[in-house]
Length: 213
Image (tube, rainbow, N blue to C red; front, side, top):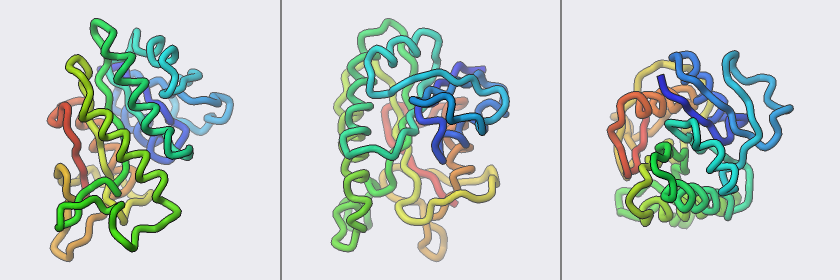
């Protein structure tokens, strides 16, 4: 059993990750900015006020946490970079910091040409700021000092949506996992499965992974 703090547990990804973790018997704390607006979270999830961009909040919540899951969204481009920086800078000062699992963007995955999807000329402009923010967060983790253990998780770049929990998926690293038709597809529910699997059986310490069917 792990003590898991989920930042952004009120969101589409975070709420499913919290539900998957508590269903498996982990102790889950939802760290959100407005606890009063999260009555829909799974039974057994404890809710507290928390902010991944706040060093003070990170330090306080780290005291009893084994793992931080960062599933924040809906902010400006700087949000993801600032959260990664606050986490890395704060946790590296602690004697036994929790591991960080950051739910990042699929647009940072690489095309067959070896360039990020967010650099493609037809990449949707309305998603560019978020994609750039997630790319900056990944760069923060990759340049972090020893002492902080992190994992960055990228869903598929295009076909990622709520749906069925199958419990099945395949993993990759910097390129999307594709089926025989070249499609990379995953539900939020199975992303949650992949993340809790990584918590229970770590395979991607200080690395990025992606998952799809």
